[in-house]
Image: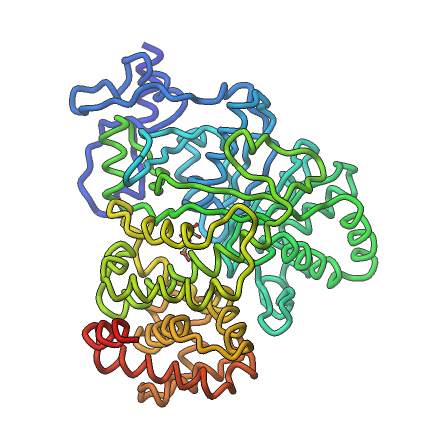
Length: 531
Ligand code: CS2
């Protein structure tokens, strides 16, 4: 009777489903500790005759024993499908349950709202060959909207039990000034955080949390960036220090001294392809799990994590979950960024230019697959130093195979978003190294030209990029290769003056842009196959 009431109290009356304007069944219980437990005993909605396969009980953590030890900033799909899974596996393998995750959403409160009625539980549905059965993940112990509860975020970072802060806030979340490579102190939100308002930026949250730790004697802390940025740990340390240095002298001196003595910033390389969850994915999970999970994520089966082992106050036994600890993380990260992420971006923009909706569709086009192979083998591999244990050819072949996963539904629009923040790290580093060595980066230039075409041919409101307005302000009304290429090359936030002035590079961009713009897919096929 009591169980039944609890089940009813979890019946989904979710706003978001209504907002999506679809007629849904309302007799499916929402995922939570109680409904999942009831599912295991066969008394819950999961055993409901309407649903074919009620999932088997999961290897969940003993939730009553899990204590918070990590604050995670940026509770997007990637963090749930990667970091939360590794941490849960580490806790399960080691029996050390002191690494529960307090998750913080950044700009939008959606995920915090989705997880709250679910006791932090969510499902990971692997898609593609070798996919594991559906899995409910239980390592998130609290979900907070950073936008709405910034002081709570600072308190959680400052709590003595917190020993690690992890973050996945995407490239733009770091507020980097492209000219200096350090913190953009001209950014409005950074300025507000510096002025002492409850912090809204990730760097502000971290700095204020550390400041509070320094005042309360909460002990050392590790800040672990898990975003696709080169030397992400070192970079994050630089940004947090720049924030501290920009505070009034009475604050900055003590904070910088405490930081130097108590906080470490290891670098990491993270890898798992995680598309945005669709309504169809949520319905499929509901059908399979027998419970409604508004926070479910889908992901490819592959996942990898390479971490530098410089933790200030302990860490989960992530190695027991398959993470690799290495002293050479920078090399792993460079390889991943300039091989995997670079070709991902290339496929996204070639796909967007030719009407291909998913990365799998784009890599299914032989010419595009060939262009990626050549970019990786011809442009990138010769100018990067691979870490021990990574075979370049095998890595590139595996990457293309992962892109081809037909079940993933990773959209070219998603991967193509925020290009202004990505192409420099993924492609321009490779292009510069080739030009410096007197080589022609033909294929990497194709990717940049395809990005330029995407920027120039997408209406401002639809261009998913934090610099959309600025990029479009730099463009003339008549958009051809001859006008767009020089205009975007002159965009200082992306191209440095030397690269912008390189005649050979500009010619390559003009060549490819013309083909994309005037000949479309047929022209590209022809040119790539004979290139
Ligand atoms: C992608 C990455 O959206 C993107 O920019 O290239 O999110 C990519 O899927 C991951 O880095 C894979 O680990």
